[in-house]
Image (cartoon, rainbow, N blue to C red; front, side, top):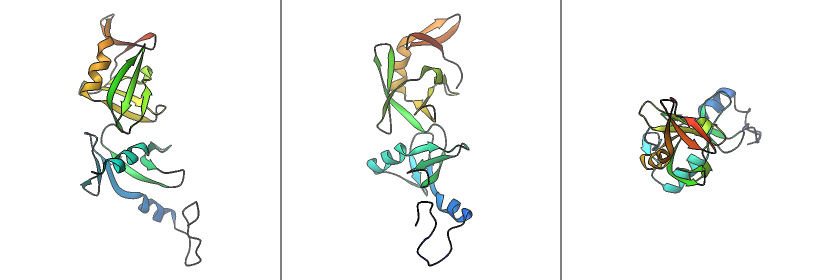
Length: 166
């Protein structure tokens, strides 16, 4: 195989675009509870699950994928958020988020919102992925919620950010 995914062994023509698309549809799904599935079976191995979550990305056309590099990726159906915020800690005036892929990053308060289920949501990885707060993480974040002009807002990163619909 060449880097572009075409055959170079002399045994046949390169893969067509349609064939590559079929190869990328491998039966991966992420349900609303954050469980990973492959062809109807839950991905139970913790390190494989974490690796798949770390590879989550979104193509330029908005399609959800697990990406190894620019050429090697597979499609994944995402029912709700890509990641879960499993823990949150106040570090001074910033809210540090622990994600279920093992990463830690600061909350971008401009991306914070409230979902239909009244759960907090935000964007992570530079805004590319959606994240949903678990109950425990949400309780930590809500420690600094204030009412401002009749609207709930979170005081973080030196400013007050309204909790709007996500």
